[in-house]
Length: 323
Ligand SMILES: [Zn+2]
Image (cartoon, rainbow, N blue to C red):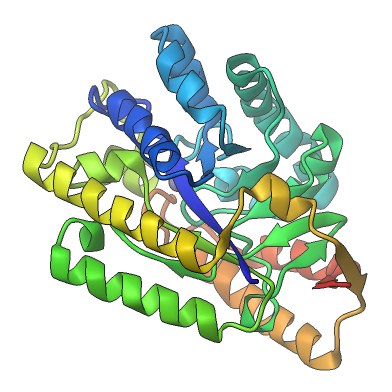
């Protein structure tokens, strides 16, 4: 039976309702008997600790948990930090940044993150060096890419692609939600992979009608916290209801596992084919160049050096298959 992991990102340290939203979703998954794969920023871990939200931290403990970068959209983002550095300089800079997130995560949960997930659309290959140094075995939402969403290894770290997603705008509308659910269930069937990653949203974006990091767009850092507007309680309830129905349905069809169990699957690593390498080169380069347009990124950010550094590690690429 195919395995599926369901991801949510928890990252809003600003808006007052965000902590309560962060509490609702791990409980919603647990109520449905589904283990989620939740990705929390170091900054979110620090704020939950400062606000003594032990209830929130406890609610996440039954799930698979990852680090969603140290500070996500705060500047410099991962790409802004590493775009102009040599690979060796970048390894030191990435480690010194992400180690802070790792420590905040371990301090809150009393355990290590099992994976790392890039913020929004930002990444550079030095992250894989950091993950090895921190003992984090996998990265999710991989910007490195093989055909058909295949799991792979890059620079010695397991890379998990996000094949499918359902947006908060879809969850908020019954008709859109049901169409999105049908699309995702059909697509899982047609993707010929033993494991498939599905992203189902951000607690804070279920609760608010804008992304929390809008004040940080285009390289900006506001002097004081700026808030975004919440959606109505009715819309929030409706969205959660639709997600709950989906969880009840997908667990009857597929084996829904946390990323900790994904990492422990019996992966074998093979040298990629010529076609795999060609796909990797063209698609990974295009994704990295496209990522400079992620709204928080400063204008004029160039991915040239990040693409070069990534391609210099092409020889470490392995296709992951199950034995
Ligand atoms: Zn995020």
